[in-house]
Amino acid sequence: MPYREGQRLPAERASRLGHLEVLKSDLVKQLLERFEHNTVDEPAHGPMWEPLPASGEPLSIVFGVDGSLQVVSSDTPPYMALAFVKTALLAVDQYAISRLDREAPNPFEVRDILAQSAQYHATAFPLRNVSLAGMCNYDAIRQIVFESLKDASLEGEPLETLKWLIFEKWRKGGRELAPFQCPHCEQEVATLAFDADEGVCAQCGGKLFVTDFLGFHQEMSLDSAPDTIATSYMAIHETLLLFTAVRYFWQRQRQILSSCLFVKDGPLSLYSQYAKLVDPIRRFLAFAQEEGTPIYMMGQEKTGRFTDHLHLISRDAPSGSFFVPDTAYISEQIQHRTSRGKSYGEDTNYGAKVFVKLSDYHSMVLSIPTGRYVADPTYDDLIGADNILATLPTILSHRHEGALLPIELAHNVASLATYPSVPILKIFAERARQGLLRM
Image: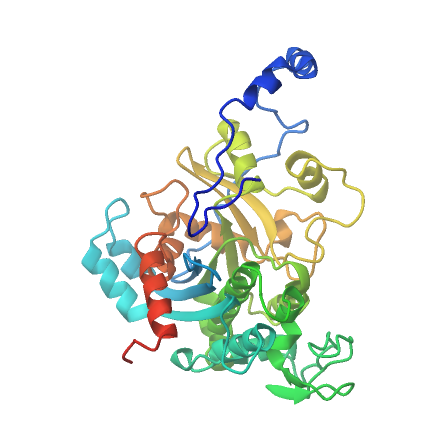
């Protein structure tokens, strides 16, 4: 690795002649002669595409959730780093969607929709060489996560949704909170009283927040935090925003849920220690279906291995078709590994993958819940698939391939562009740190 640029001297440059030794290497020459140019690998076992069902009814109310983040750093030592996170929830009905031009929507109509039906949340995390007064970053970020989920602009609803899920308040009597790692003594003995926001560890007496259950402290050191803290928080907040809308109707007007589609940007999954939210979500979705109130929900993946694989297999797929891959197909054809060990998504996913091709210009990778985990899902396992797939043609955008209007509109609210957002946030952070901003 080269030396970085300093205050007085320039950065070290790579050698302009360093490639000569590579070109002279006999081993490199022999390997290049043995390499063969491969065409794009075709799946060893072709997908079984099926025609889209014609039995579903489009859902009339659609919720979309999206998030964005930017990490800004100072240009001089000690290189302060802050992360800004923004998430948004948008609700729109089919009448409003039908009035939008799918190729060039009127900016004023988009503005009106966003003004009437979008809510957003924003927060910031100190990552390196910046902290809250009197607190190390470890405790500061724990407190910021707790306070951010209690955001007054959202009336603290995401925190209530977190408790609704982990205490399983949707079922009669609820459920005690499972023990989790204490952020102070690091023993798996921490827990809280039912529905409590805060408490103390029975082992060491350290203060606990209900958000400590999620395990953000397991990613951090005392004085700094990785950029992934912001990514993890964004994923958690997007999930809680989506289920806040579900909880609202479940508690107040449950019958409306039969007309709602909840759409998330990205797969229906959580990873690492945050996957402990997956089981409560699965149990709720299964319970709701058993109670006769299925939750119509889906996630859409825009990038990654599954999207790359879709580009490969959709070329020969008929329009108006879908394919639900099983664990063996995902392991061998997409992840390129053996199917031994745990089934795909067993610990992390609350939705099964579905490849959908509506036309030559609209193919997408979706996740649709199955309730309890199913290793090899079929179409019949997908909760509300008929109505979800029937809704897709009504919410398509023609501005991007495979784009969905609810996600596109939510992105309009949540996005933080590299330019001009980052320079502005950098100036904002520096002036706020120096106390120059007037609130």
